[in-house]
Length: 113
Length: 117
Image (cartoon, rainbow over the protein chains, first blue to last red):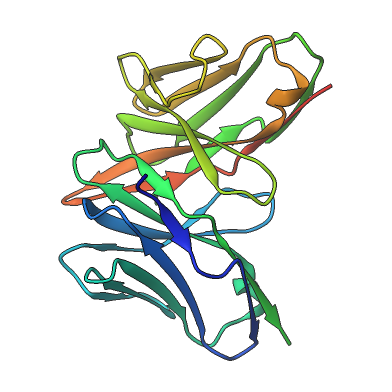
């Protein structure tokens, strides 16, 4: 069936380096994508989103890239900080699905000193 | 902006009792809210879509008589776990959909950890 998944379950990054978290999706009808950050014991926190009519969107220290040709989504975090340690989920929304999101499996990012 | 709260943050109850969890959008109105369940180190699993003024839409495999949802106002949805059993122990998270122009983003509450003894 259609799904959203992540390539790497765990990503270890040295403080100050850039992080890249990848996500593959298979639903060609998806038109809206969101990255969430979830710290232990807390709800997901919105990071950045992108619509399918865009290839790139930048926020504060974060950039989301969308490659519709290969159905690939990535989140780049610049100058990773200890506070960036968390699980990151990509989520996709299919057009006309009343806002329902499908979540990927998640990537645990561990920032080392 | 876009703050969603949940109450309680954690609850412990005896098997057979019912537990109500509240989800509130604090600074915006949400005609649609969603309820998720999350097991340790797993992703979020959508349980149901809560629509203000109408019946909730449940995902396949989710018992609607077990998980009662009421979306009484544009800022409040409640999830009641009826006759809770230990297997219902989990982290329950709600989200509220904020529509802003062409963007419709879900903002999540902090979650409620339920432990059924």
